[in-house]
Image 1: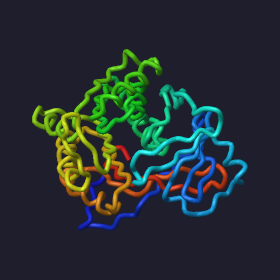
Image 2: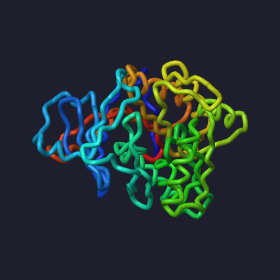
Image 3: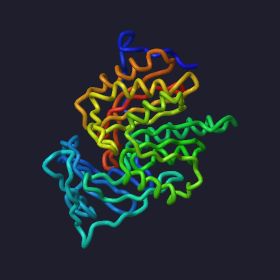
Length: 311
C-alpha cells in the first residue's frame, strides 16, 4: 500500500543516489581533469565533464587509446567538435541494451544518442510495465516527453506498453524511428509526435487523456518545432501541473530528470510535491551517477525526482 506524500511542510527529504553500472555495451572507464573516458560498444571516447575535477585513475597511455576526443566550444553546453585520434572518426555504430538496439553517433553537442545514467530509470519503468502488462488488462500507457532518440520509449514498448513519444526535433524523431526498426520493434504501439512537449501536454489535459507512467527529461533551454521557447525555470511548474492532471489513482510513476541547471534538487522536489499534493504516492529525489569501472566511485550526472505508487 502506498503512503501519502510527505510534502516539504510535513517532513524532511532523505536524498537518494541512483548509480548506474555499466553493461555489455557501455562502461565508464575513468574520469578526471574535467573529462571522462567511456566505452560505447566497440569505441572508446574521451568527453568533457565539468564534475570530474579530481585526478584520473588510469594512465595517460590508457586515455590515449580513445578513438575520438570531444573539444568543447566557447560555451560549456554549446557546439564543439570531435577530434579523431586514429585515421578517421568513428562512423555511426550500434549500441544494445536489453532488447533494444540504437545507433550511436558523434554529435556536435558531445552527445551520442543515449544517456547511460538513465539505466536506473529504464529498468524501473520496464519492471512496472512488465508487472502491469502481465495482469491481462489493457496495456500500460507511457508518455515520454523530450524523448530524444527513444531509448526510454523503446524499452517499455518492448515490455508491453503503449508509448507516446514527444520531441520537438524532427531529426531526433527520425533517429528514434530508425532505432525502432533496428530493434525489430516496427510493430510496437508507439506514437511518434514532433511537437513542443509543454503544448502537447496541455492539449492532452484538455482532451481528458491519462497515462500510467510519464517520463520527462527537459533541457535547460530549447525551442519547439514552431519556434516555441522552453526555459526550464519558467515553464517547468506548469508542465508538472499538467503531468499531474494526466495521472490518476491508477497511475504508477512520474520521473523527472534535470541537467545543467542551477536549480537545487530540493527545488525540484518541492515543485513535484506541490503538483502532486492531492495524489497518494511516494516522492523520492536525489542525484543520478555513473559507476566508474577503474575505482567503483560514482561520477554525478543529473538531478532527479520520482513520484511513484509502485515504490
